[in-house]
Length: 333
Image 1 (cartoon, rainbow, N blue to C red):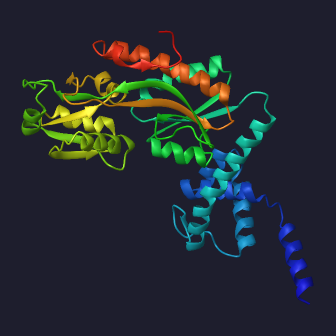
Image 2 (cartoon, rainbow, N blue to C red):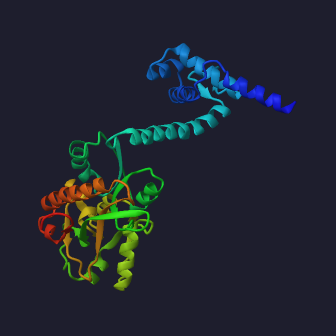
């Protein structure tokens, strides 16, 4: 008896009237966000009656009420809240599936998803957009900003195709890294600081170090170098974005240790700083384009060269005194 009942249940579910589950979930998510069936239906390009039917079908399928219609605006029931949480994942997965299928069927890449270091995202975006669309022929570019740690996990999860990131992600069996540039770190002082920039002892007595947190790749890298140099400075503030670190210097109470790519946004915004060579052994960091091994090789090479061109032009304009100290890869000397 159990087998026929199970088959009857499957037939009944499959035969539910006009049930397009994905469309119904899409309607439900719109209603949950806008709290009105009429407004959600209009946004989705359907009639109110059609939207209401999708909601009714969903409630019939699950056997629960998803919306509390006794209130205005509409609110979600407990079951509706659970469906909403799942709905975000369902619709995102469908969009990812559509994008992946388009890639398989397209003669050229239809969408390029890139992660950018947050410190240079604003500098790179205009030039990258034009280059990707016009020169590489990719019609859509999706950008996200973050840290190198974000980029590595996003590449591994196939959430992005390429990353313009730091050397935390390097060549291995899973990744291919194409160098863009190598840049030195500098001592960054308040513009009004009048002391000797070569006397780090005096600087550390008068100012506190504002630094990146140890959870960030550049913060760990800086800490490791200072430890090698046997330098221990009083610290007043930690941050995970370069603009926040530079803002600490602008207060006049702090100094920082930063590279040009970490300074570019602050200088472009007009923050007044004094940039000096490090008064102790220096260190450098590499910016590179990273892709999954065996994927998008030609695009990655082209983008690495374009990023070098964009950054070279901006650094020459913003840091004329130190621009020659940055080493670019893949560009004419």
